[in-house]
Image (cartoon, rainbow, N blue to C red; front, side):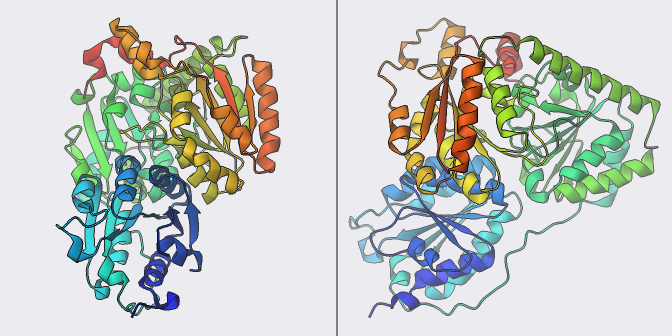
Length: 567
């Protein structure tokens, strides 16, 4: 006899996840009542219904990034699971704490053509920290709590729990309320910290690079203090952005592909690099001449990060905030807080910051360029907004400080090293749902917006009031740019059919505008602010020129393939 709804194992699953610290379940409804249905009646859980599992995975990423809590993606065996994999690929790349809960078909159907049977664990294993098949009801609570633990501890990431059909049709196991799963924090070896501090205080030009791993640790204040003690230029990766206020006197924007000249000189001339909470992926290393010859001090909670992109002189295993604090204390013990060398470094960094701003101001003319559009957007939504980005050619301008300058209270959500197209809109939905008190804005290209359009009805249903700036080059800008560099045909990169996105936005009660001058964009942004208070989506399209290429992209390509691929 099947279990009654009140006794169903799905209620145990939902309650266990809520107890463990999850607050959102994303997915599509299954044929029979499942996890989403149980979550709707479970205190502490919210349910986000989406139109597409791929979008659901991206929404989970956006929600986790803003809420700081793990998110749950509910899927089923077969196409439902397979469709989520692209979003999970991005979640794995970003180190987003996402718990995937899925079903497994009845055992009697395995190997005999069971409907929608697929080897889910094998498909997902390259992306997951752990996967487990629950085949006995007594394993259910243990497996879920362990999944949450692994999702948030060490290097955060994706975990997979499959629940066999037989378990879901058996009597529900007893669930006893349990405390939230705690994020474990640990400090680095004291002697190694001292050794790193001696290298930093003895450096001619130390540079600090803070990555996305600093965010779950809340390491912003500790990293800022350490940089101040060292008088060291402070960079972030794309994932680390928002950790420190980019108007801080030592802040020099992003590292690698997104570095704005003349800040690249500081990276080039640095002799000691302190990387905290970053895997130093390829994008962070692009255009960074001589990184492999510098002394690297690497801090991370995951020992597998070390010796991956570069071999560190000192590897410090520990929580980013705790280790940054240890290093700051050790630096104080090694050297006085204010020195002539430090003052000279501060002055040099100030000159670099002035040069970055002057370069940007000189390019800010009467035409509606991408940098001008981004400046107007930020003036409208403020430096404390939630900024969601894609990684197309023109919207990469938004990664460049001071074209966009974010405060330490901002939330910045970007794709990881996989840079899936269509990430932005569903990620913005999850982010806005996590925090309705601030504006959530998305900057993307027209191709990416079309690919993420399945998330638009969800944004409407939830009255999230998103503001979307679409930089329209009528096609795919990045392959077009690369083909132009190689003298190759670009016909396939160009859209010829009329755009349908504005009609979809208006059909759902949203606002649209197409702007070709700064005045038109300023007016559209005023309308967007009003629409936000009404919970309506606004999509503003700005046509862009093919030659309006971000400075970091141009810098890397002008340096030639060898420099762009430097590790």
